[in-house]
Length: 176
Image 1 (cartoon, helix red, strand yellow):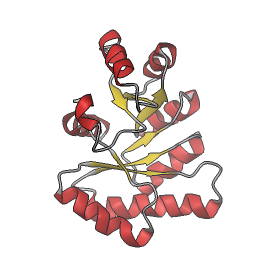
Image 2 (cartoon, one colour):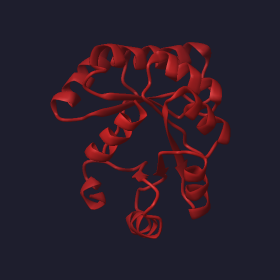
Image 3 (cartoon, helix red, strand yellow):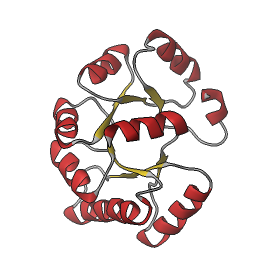
């Protein structure tokens, strides 16, 4: 499963963050995105969320996985604890995305077989994340830092770098 997720993300080069989608609109929007060729989607956890908000995110992950799991990879975003890794895995997540480099999160993801993405910006953070088992490192923020993205990817070709934050249809071409 982890290898398939890595391959999917490497080949398709895009994960759509489904932030702000209501439960009512999520599946309709996901279906449209899939028809447009999107192969990976992420449901973020809300920082300092209530149990109700966590449950809402988990239900959205489970719904995407149930309806479209054979067509896409589904992930949990903004994962800040090993507890959230376990919950995301239980909901069916194929990958987790953390906004930081967190040893416990990366270790738990590895232990439960969920592909981990860590967030980083400095060379030290990026290399630490890779050393701790992150399959990808999301370089955050990317907005107005395209020269930095190029510099990092050239300097650290052994690390799978993803652009994150501030990427949209107006500037994504610059990252290809």
